[in-house]
Image (cartoon, rainbow, N blue to C red; front, side):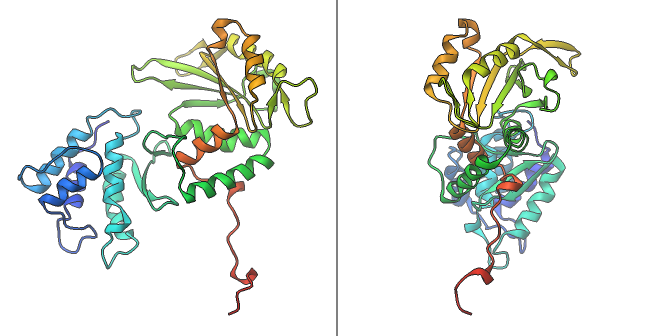
Length: 329
């Protein structure tokens, strides 16, 4: 993606800390080199005018590949996060609210808004798509203490939410954040219109080719036992739904024609047992087997946590009331 030259110049001035009484630290030539080294780049200040040099660096960074047309490159996201690090707060702006306001005045013209997350790191939100621009999420990395608490709250919500809430309040925001678009929910009121799909959506590859995905979601554990416990789903029930999903056409109004689903997600709010995965794979032919992808409870919890999405309203813990504590006043 491309940012206006004026935007790059203004962000460069913030990085340099130029101006009188600005809420940004002043960075000399050596500190500018250290700034870009700390975000895992190899840029070294060449002695040119500092703001001109930083603008040129930002211009080069914006030429790097981006996850999608609506998200800046990962290096630019690291630039913003480092620029807004609360450790660099000046005395008269300890919470960096003034710095955030100045940065957002610049970013708003590009359709972005900067904000601080629960971990005190600075993130960018695309105001047009309402998605949070974050580096590629790694659900397998160690979680911070704040992320662990967030994961626990979400896990408790999964235990009590309905299947529709799982889809509407967790899966739809999650897949939208991961870059899927044209997400359409079939709903559960009219089962005849589902054809095995709870949701269908599109994903555009960097080559601009489009893949179509369907989602079959179950709230609880998915197993393959002969006697399934109440509340759980049996994989045999999923087989017919997946077969319909892969064989039934969907109408994409943006291109004005019907298309087939390329891949199917089987999503469960509980565990998908290994036996269930093997059973389903053995009952699908080889071509359809490669089209199936699984996402169980742990996958949902980890991905939702690392993508920086806010908790659903029903998962937000109540605020602590000091009057309920035993601490004497």
